[in-house]
Amino acid sequence: MDFNEIISLKEQGKKLNSKQINFMIDGFVNGGINKEAMGRFLVAIYQNSLCKKESYYFCDSMIAQSKNLDLSCLENTVDKHSTGGVSDSTSLIVVPLFALLGYTCLKMSGGALAHTGGTADKIKVFKNLKNELSFSQAIEIAKKCGGCFVTQSEELAIADKKIYALRNEIDAVMSIPLIATSIMSKKIACGAQNIVLDIKFGNGALLKTKQEAKKLGRLMKYLGECYGKNVSLIYGDMNQPLGKYVGDFMEVLEVIQTLKKAEKSPLLMHSIEIVAKVACKHNEKHQFKKHCYELVKNGKVLDKLKEIILMQGGDESLFSFNYDIWHEAIFAKNEGILTNIDCEGLGNFDHKMKSVDGYLGFKILKRLGERIEFNEPVFEVYFEKETEIFEVGENLLACLEVE
Ligand code: URA
Image (cartoon, rainbow, N blue to C red; front, side, top):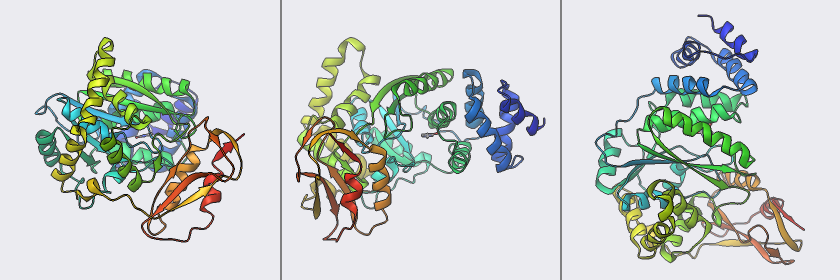
């Protein structure tokens, strides 16, 4: 087979068969096809797309290169994946909640991607926590407490790792079949029987419209079903941060506070919705969500989260943390209704600030549609100790449109 011929077929918008797609992926992972040729192939897909069948061949070839997990020794396995958001810490609520409901949730996560956050970074806020676990260690913990947070290992989804890095380099990220195959090759490799996909849309998400998000959702569901998985979809609006805090440390504290106060915030309610998508029948949704909320209210979800963190060697002091953290308020320079939030801009700001010594995150005090008065605090920026902050306010205020 000649890779130039395969690339040129895709450049002409022709459909490829499984052998041709496998030849490209196998060659790229194992050294027969170089970055330049694979880059051309990915750009051809980016421009001309893949049909459902080709997407399946692509996903299947990626899975064939991965060392996959066998979770057959665990009961009722479930996995959750978000396509990426800002202040999206639902995994820290969803994993213990699933565990309490009799599921086993081995949550394999990556770090931050572009302007979005990643569970692997957030979980590291618990000092000493070990999440670079071997498959057998992760399975052991999940067996004992129903949940476990693990970082993606080198061998798992190796094809995705290499292809994703190249897509980032050549700016070929925003392609529905490439996103779908990237996510689903990982999810299938992780081995859970039930998969819930939290697909974000809006200016803080990879896909900007709900229509595109739905197209991605349908393709991911199809791919999962090709492997006999039960795939549930939920769509999340990312035109504003899901929680009130942005930044790994502050987001983890927000989760603990939300669980302690059983605050019916968008963060908590969306987390419950995610679990409901998998664990309850349509006509019992109201009762089921009430039951989940009760589990939060009586402290069971917080206790379960703590149990998992401790089992992974994490420090428990954050569960009794005193919230008196140094912060500076940023005041509004205009008054009116908050009509737009540049959520991607807020995510990028947080990523940039991560390299600033002592930075912990920031809080956004207003949600879309709320009124802002002149000189009213709209953000709070948090640091470990008193810090002089320059231009921070300007950068954050530039993300708000007030009319
Ligand atoms: N998340 C992934 O894992 N892959 C993508 O391509 C996009 C989001």
